[in-house]
Structures are given as structure tokens and as C-alpha cells.
Image (cartoon, rainbow, N blue to C red; front, top):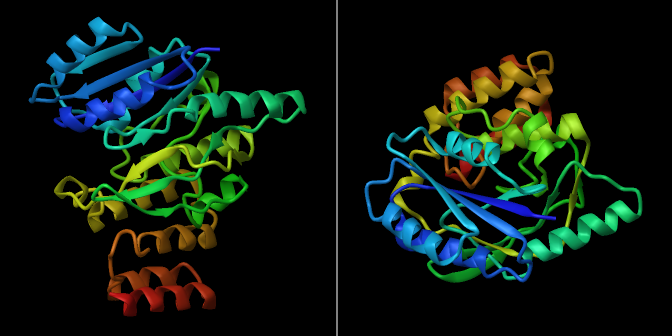
Length: 282
């Protein structure tokens, strides 16, 4: 069973090379890697040409105009020849047995007549080259739980048909593209299952290109689009989603307008307490 791994990238040739090597060096060899260069102006194209000449499992697309990571992912997914698909960010890395473990666990579940919508794993969190934590995740995740937190993370493993039938990534989402896509997958195909072995190194080193992703205006735009599409008739789900903007990860402090908007959605003591804690935290 072939597995396609997609990697969107832009102007990060050196760290991209580490990501690509971590995939090509998997113990499970029936793979293809599709890198989409999203308007890169560095030496990314030359690197990909040279690397793919050495290993024909590496394929790539060069986009002269940047259209964002969701569009890059979608391009790779549409051209994937693998029966299964997963992704990798260009600043992260796979441990050598990640794909093999995914295939083995999927096969094991299938033999026991269990078909999850997708698989996901804990992550090894690194900062400045050193491991600082291992993420803890739920054993199973349903779509309702996505409102409270993105319990899956930034990557999932599933048949290509799941990606296609769920509608691919929303290219208009200014943030939370992974989380919104996972929500649609879980709602359409059922709960996701955890492979409880950390096999991905996730880089959390502070960088200037992460500031815009955590910008409040982008998060508010993503929140509004998420609510419009998925929870217009559920104020409590909208409140849960709203609270995600003020997690420690984003470092954003609620202001008066946030309080007004939150309370207008309904009186929820537990949620008000959470918003109060976030207000005092920073």
C-alpha cells in the first residue's frame, strides 16, 4: 500500500531538506513525497531538482505565486498516487518508523473490523533543537471535541478518499485550516483513533514567520468562518471555539469587546471563568 506524504514549503530550503530526508529514510519504503514550493524565491527549486534526480520517489510542484499552505496541500493531495496520505510541515521531521507504524496499526484495526476516520499520534515538541515536551492526546476524537481543542494536532493519516470526500483544505481560512478540515473529516467519517507512539518531531522554536499566524485578526477571521460553516445554531460550541483564541499557545489577552461578544452568546459560568483566567494570565 503506497503512502503519499505532502510537504508545503516556502523559502526554507535548508530545513526542508531535513524534512524530506526524514521521509525518504522511512523504514516503510512504498512511499512518494510531494513537495509544493509555494512561491519560493530561494534555492528550493534547484534543491528539489537535484534531490528528485537521486530519488524518484520525490516529486514536486513549483508555484510562481504564493497562494498559501492550504492550496499547496490540496494540489499535492489531488496528484497523490498513494492509497493513503499524510502530511509534514517543512520545519518538522518524521522518526524513521512513523509510516510503518501507521500502516501496521491501520491493518490491525481493520483486521478487528474497526475503521476510524483517520489516525494521529502524539508529537515530540522541540524548541531550539532540544526536546521540551511530548504532547498528550485523547485516545479517540469526535467532531464535537474539536470545538474545545484541536486534539489531533497538525497531521492525520487516512485513505486518500477521506481527504477528497471531506472536501480538502479550505483555502479561504486565514488560520485553523487543519482544525477545520479535521472537523469535517470526523463529522463525515466518524471518530479518529490515536496511535499512542510519538513519531513526529514538531518544531516550536519562536520565529518571525509564526507571528502572523497567531495574529488576533487572523484568528478572529478564522473563528467567524468556522462558526458560519459549522455552528451557527450552537452558541455553546461557538463559545468553546472562541476560547481557543485565548489559549497559552497564542498569547492573546481578551479585551472588553471579546467579553461582550462572549457573553452575548449565552451565560455560561465555566466559560466566563476560563475567559477571566485568560484575561489575568498575560
